[in-house]
Length: 161
Image (cartoon, rainbow, N blue to C red):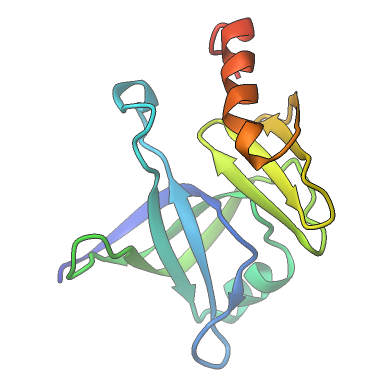
């Protein structure tokens, strides 16, 4: 397994959690290619599992960072030994580039579909859909209707999200 010092920009996938050791925090960073047009539409995003033991970074992760926040993290990247496992980044610097546009509420789950964000609520089948820029797309009747709603939005708007 090789390691490399690097800086990565990406979105926080879920609320950061306390890490496996006291005083640490962990989170997943979703990274998209810089030239997104060169990648197939169905290509998966890259997930990098991040951990930090720096008290200032840990505090910020556990109290201020929400899903959808765009971060720039710097640290030591350890490549996975087994294909399919996420890369691991030990973070020694963190910068918030942009905050998520949709607040996260208890018992609510945000998910990302490429350039779209959806909100799953345990109390209803309906699923609100937004672009990652916060533009309202519509309300899918149920999770199975999300793809149809996104397809209609892209046809009407010429792929502009």
